[in-house]
Length: 93
Image 1 (cartoon, rainbow, N blue to C red):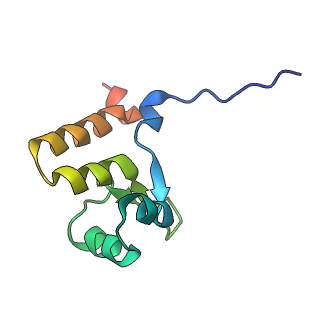
Image 2 (cartoon, rainbow, N blue to C red; image 1 turned 90 degrees about the horizontal axis):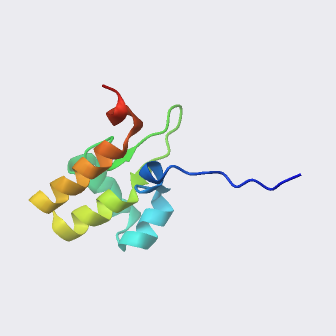
């Protein structure tokens, strides 16, 4: 029997989603600060989302970190465009 590795689509793994605990560790922000940003600043479905049937929040690690560095600048908008183009739905014509 051969050991096959799962082949991951690089378009889908370029923008990993992480739990709040990992987002806190990666960003240096507290969970409370992230919650406040989620409620007041960061757009759902771009920066974070709730998986169906869950109250858990998953964060778009690269996009949130990019926002922390670049704020709402043209450079950050390019990062968002790259993320949206990486989604499978962007291939549909």
